[in-house]
Amino acid sequence: KSDEGDAILERLISLIEPRTSIPLMLDAPDDASLENLISLDPVLLDCATAFEKRLIFDAVEAGKLCYVVTLRPSEKILKTSFEPLDLYRMLEVVGDILLNLPILEDVPDIAEYDTDKYYFSFKFLVASDYAPDLIEDLLATFYEIGEMSARLCNKNSTQAQN
Image 1: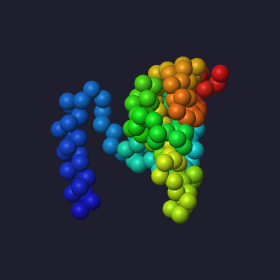
Image 2 (image 1 turned 30 degrees about the horizontal axis):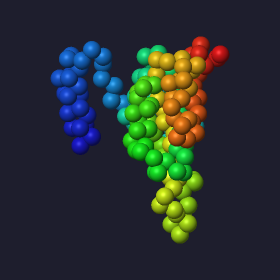
Image 3 (image 1 turned 135 degrees about the horizontal axis):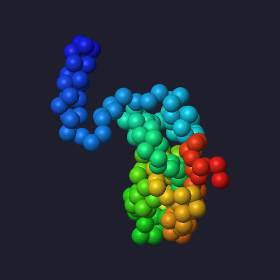
Image 4 (image 1 turned 90 degrees about the vertical axis):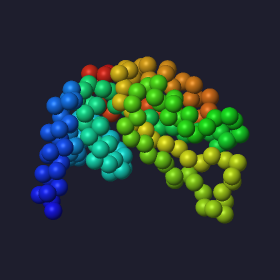
């Protein structure tokens, strides 16, 4: 069955690839290849799907700067007009969201849970064309609703060495 599946996949690629401007890369790069290009928390890398790993690899290879953006909304965020999906809209200003990971360590047990408080925080991997000094400026509005940090992850970027 594996050979049959491989044959079908090869046939699909041969039909689609001539119509695309870049070759289709359906395989995930191995973790070592990614680790040579980008410095990521192992938890983020372990959580990435094969497709997300391919997106990360291709973004770095294309010259994008990758940032781990950690966002922690204020506990009182639910009392504002802010919607959790607004986080994505804010980050899309910076670049392409390649990966997101909710951080649940501050979520209390159900007996202590207060429905008026927001306990979640997030880590996002964002591919961008913007230099590090512009990232915080672009995300400055987030400081009004919580805590934010951004860290450049590219290992061989001249930006990463500054």
